[in-house]
Image (cartoon, rainbow, N blue to C red; front, top):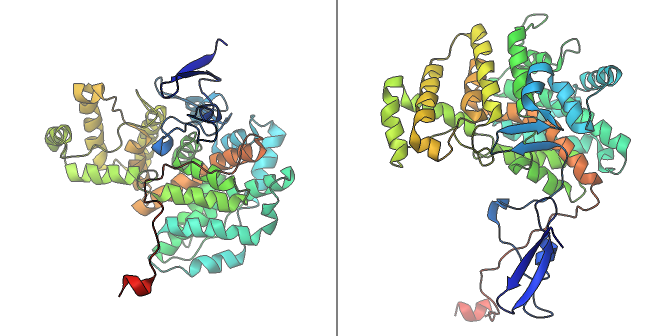
Length: 429
């Protein structure tokens, strides 16, 4: 056997040939290594799944060392420049680019499913005035499962398609209404005459005007941001969607788990942390002292480095260009000059080069969102809207994967064993 790993168990002296396929070995093969028949097999301890593949996937390819990100084989740079969000959503979900007829039908379906049941509106109005928009989004996405009980029939392909269309269509409506709720403003209904992203901006910002018309440059920039966030392999929230989805629950419940995972500051909240860091620096003159603080362990450099990317984040280059387009419309955010100078110094400093710390997608995205006048608590909602097609593409793949089982990782037990229980009457005597 050429593609195999020979393992010698020094406890028993026995050798095992473990097949290697696609650069991996099966955990079940490792489990065959044991000290004696009837004893537990060897397991792999991997907190955070740092080096564990949980699935086979054809959705997204990442080469962190080379800074490559591809959706279904198409480079993210080309998709961001030449495509639009709904076309990318179709690509992720269906695996191929749409024909003209398929694209028109897809856009039509999603456009005419942006409306939600009036009871959803009543449900959202029941939240406190200061409810976090992300918490509202998570709850309302989960609540959709009660409006579409047929969504539990996940083995029916036509049914799955209907739920996917509904969820991609309704996410901007739910996100916009969560924003309006926090603002104390009336909810704005979707406008079927507008594109997906323009309609979202209308539901966010429309006031008394009969028709809201967003600047095309802002529409394009937000569309690009949605594309950049559409999928990113087996990240925390995608893993949550797959893990919950492995119980064969409806897709709304699975995606609400993804929203919950994205809510965490280590996943979706990084761009807000970048803004706080830039404000704390205050001016370009303070950057050298801040850099020294980072080196000494007294400061934390937010928006640099990535668990996957080791040289550069390809999304960061695209988002930096989008920043320039947005600021043409809104005026330059004074924090931009600090960000650009911080990036310049860090990229030339041996300390950061050695540690492969490069700007990631979060470094500039917060500046764009702030230019749109979004409050920081809305940043993750925008992330969730963009990520929805990716979550759904991964969910569909999971549902159709014959190798998948309900998620149930092993543990290493560290607690007490075989204690004798003493009744309360004796313990408290």
